[in-house]
Amino acid sequence: MKRVYQKAEPVQRAGGHGIALDGRPIKTPGKRDLIVPSGALAAAIAEEWNAQQGEVRTATMPLTRFATTTVDRVATQREAVIRQTANYAETDLVCYRAAHPPTLSTRQQEVWQPLIDWAVLRYDAPLVVTTGVIPKSQSPASLRAFAAAVAEQEDFALTALHVATATCGSLIIALALFEGRLDAQQAFAASQLDESFQIEAWGDRAATARSLDEIFTA
Image (tube, rainbow, N blue to C red):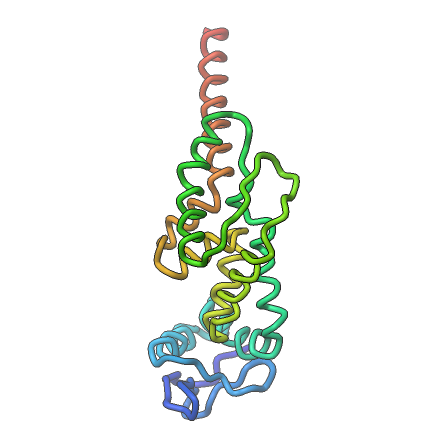
């Protein structure tokens, strides 16, 4: 849509902080009031709207999309989002290890096992670790503990945790990020461990192939 407003700014609203376009409050696509829990988030969303030139492109407004998703979907379908997020613990990425090559399994142990150990202590929720991809049942008590940790989040925090869990393929990594056990770069690296290993391996093979090609064509 075209930009028809002059200025976006954060405003104090009942129940939190809103964003106004030329004094008029922003509504979500679901026609609900866009109210966020902090002034900093409201200010950052206002900056996204002020940065638009000519056309308002929501693809360039991640915080706006995050906030409207929370208000329109997460707040209205909270129990479903909690279940979707918590269910990742049943087959969490960090619980499935490679048998070969040994260098990959060693790296998984070094990176993922400390996260499992942290989760056990933090949530009193032991996890079963296995080799291969065949699902292993986790303790119902552990799954309840992780579900409780997800359910205690308020709507905006729940949205962030849900996105992080789905992006990482791991509730354990997402919770570690959420609670400051990992930073964003470390969480991404942990979630992409297998892929990074394969890229490194194929890169080495490609280099070897080039070297052999140079030898035999010299």
